[in-house]
Length: 162
Image 1 (tube, helix red, strand yellow):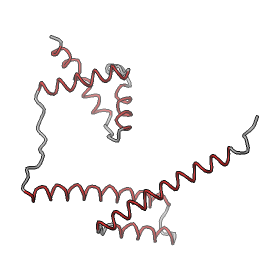
Image 2 (cartoon, one colour):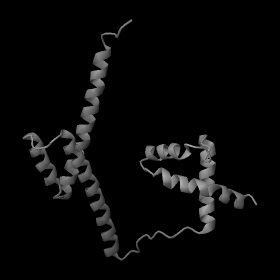
Image 3 (cartoon, rainbow, N blue to C red):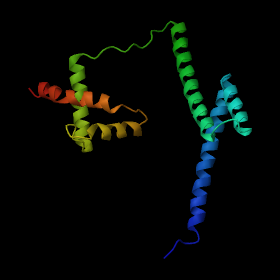
């Protein structure tokens, strides 16, 4: 039995909905950025003009430039917030190093969460599974970093179980 006549229409509607959502997101971002007075938006307009007249090698370059610009604007807003906080006289948040007990507690929590998620932190591939989970929440972590942390878990568990 082949595809039903409505299958193509459903696929087309899904594609159109995805495109519409992307356009709405872009419009909202640009409107917000324009209202904020970001001069960096001129770069987007220059790149769009270059794309329109065939001066860009690929359309993907425009997408990459826009993504890079969004990241830079977000960083500018973050830094502006920190600057405003400093000017207000309020103390800035300072990351303090973890004490040994705090570190062991966090490592124990990681071990417990791994057990709950069915991840054997000692097994090969555990770092990749944890990396994938971190990416799902929008916080990518390098496999080597995860491996280093996972190697500290047995010692932390041993001291907590004494």
